[in-house]
Figure 1: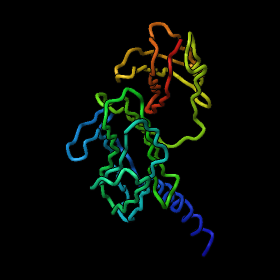
Figure 2: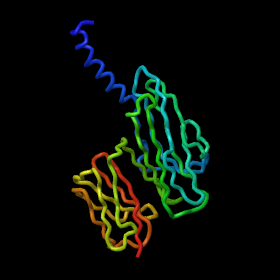
Figure 3: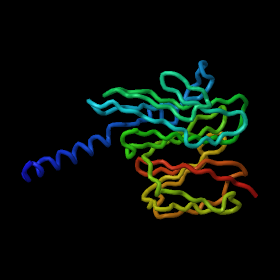
Figure 4: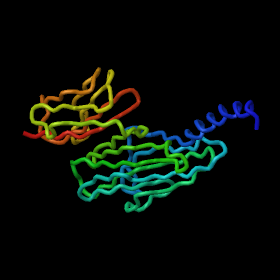
Length: 235
């Protein structure tokens, strides 16, 4: 093979590699909106898994990497069927161009007012760089599920201290520089009670102000990324 042909092939191979890394796509179809279903007796959040390739069949691994529940709560993964709540992983075969509905459901047998948190990792088995994290929060049996999705970035972390909050706490953003971000505070009933806009820098001081004792969810939004953390207010 002559040098000229090799030089011609290099950009083609680089393009093919880049294209293949984008074969799998994940899109939420219900952002912070859920519905009850009699079939499973749960609240679902729904997203679409799509094989963007027109030639390759993909194997997709869905793994429940975190499942912080309480009381009698359970979570379950559903595609065309709902799997037993004991299943922590599901593998799917997606044909070229296929779109597959993916659901995560919280099932509650009694009313609770605490916060459940479940994380699903969604990845293309043949290309682990094409990997997504889906965060799910359910506050109680009368509230909505809050959902967010972002591509994995292990360098991004949020620290909150002290927590529980007595008078003031500092929200520290590690390896994340904020520019015109928005922080929204939700109470244990899923109601928005406070919002701070135009946040810039790498930390934010949160005062107790009108917050009563209890558990809160903090949602930080910047551009197309959403980050969550919990705050406990106590005397």
